[in-house]
Image (cartoon, rainbow, N blue to C red; front, side, top):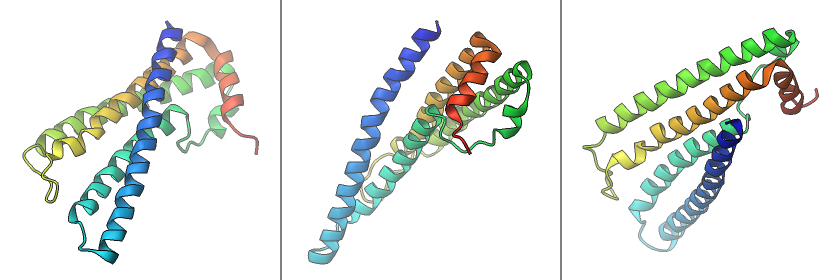
Amino acid sequence: MLGILKRVERAIDAIMQPMVFAAMVALIAVITLQIISRVFFTAAGWTEELARFLLIWITFMGATLAFQRGRHIAVTFVVNALPGRLRQVTRILAVAIVLGFMIALVLVGYRYMQMQSFQTSASLGWSMTYVYAIIPVCGALMSWYAFVDLVELVSEGPDAAETASDISDPPL
């Protein structure tokens, strides 16, 4: 079962990476167009709004990729100092808390997205639902990643937790 979960995780990652890259390229293009239009022509008002929306989406998608890779800031020296079984239980508890937070993010993000659904953006005329949809979407993806981590920690035992910490923590 863990193999299937990991394959789904890799498939999501294979979709997210090009999306973040494309959004970054689009952001650079839009900002370049904005600069050129301000200097040489009449400023295109929609470029500022689109750049803001792209930055919001890039932030959430990038945070999702960082979460999947374990690149968010963490203080692990206390957990790493614990004996094997206690270390595993502590990590399981921490991942369960993160999973709960991500599920809360999905629910709150969905409600917020619905609250803003009647609004449209000033220049582009887009429904703000599309802008705020990234919150529950990325919350759901991070929930999935946390769930996979939880299954991995529970199924592989304290030795796997010890090996994982050796791999993920850089030497000081």
